[in-house]
Image 1: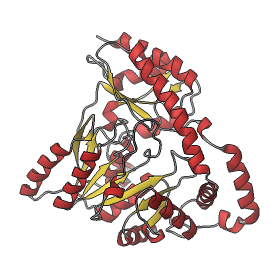
Image 2 (image 1 turned 90 degrees about the vertical axis):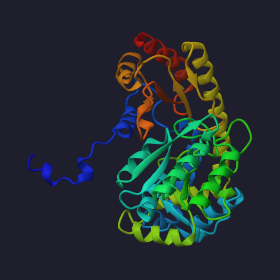
Image 3 (image 1 turned 120 degrees about the horizontal axis):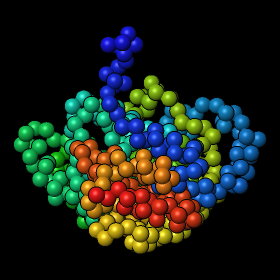
Image 4 (image 1 turned 60 degrees about the vertical axis):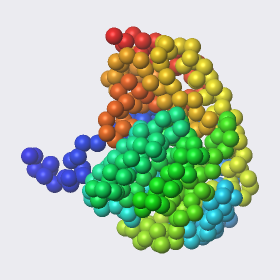
Length: 402
């Protein structure tokens, strides 16, 4: 072993997926049409309003903008988030909110609150690759449960829970993105939401609900969050402004019982200690002026057009036997190819020859799988890029078909 190698931790030496880092690299390649990263497009933002508010904040509140915030977040901003949660059917007080640097930090903190090495955690199959990376760092046993057109298969979960109870290995946590799921775009049905809550109550595990995309509905009827349906305190909610306002301000939050929030605050003091001050104050002012809701409406219209065009082109350009999800909101559709094309192996050729990128399906599975699948994110490319990119992608993949 090289001298330096022995100094690395077990965690640093463990093999890990480079997929997230590669997604961000693609943002710096203007020659590539990227359906890869789950990013908002620039036309979803309100830059003039952000510029005016930032100038006012720097002129009138420079000490707050340029200084540290309290570890839980500014009290006024926590109260704003609590009121917003309450309007969406999730009764909250400011003491039940912890502001985080994006929802993924919230997940990391909750792992520190709840998990010990070897604990069982249930994840959807497929699920968000960032969550797989975060959860995997805690050396837990990730147990996948499949999805179908109605979201997480709770009947299959119930079968697993019965077996795990007999063996004394029940899960501590279940991580889910129930609305416009990442990567599939699917939404958990109301019947399954209620069933999932019943299972959590009966078997004593906590549900981590990641609702990054839930407000970005452009079709169909609104479904209440798991947190809104929860009557027994089994759901901990992860929210973020990355998709509805700006990923650059790095603002997310945990909504949980006060006892959980207090434990998370204590653990956070050994990490980054507090969130972005300017981001919190900017988001607060956006909220006061109704600009978050305005941006959500604008984003919803753009997503409807982009998703519609993407699905139309998939139907026109891809071969018979190709399947894809039909999301009612959010950023993604999930494509399953016929035949034996390995989308991970095909990705380099698609980028270098077609100048089009996606994320291979295998990145989203805890237990293996997804080799003939990929996630297509329609939020970031323009309509013109979608018109050019989807046919080029179809042509390149067709050339690889055996």
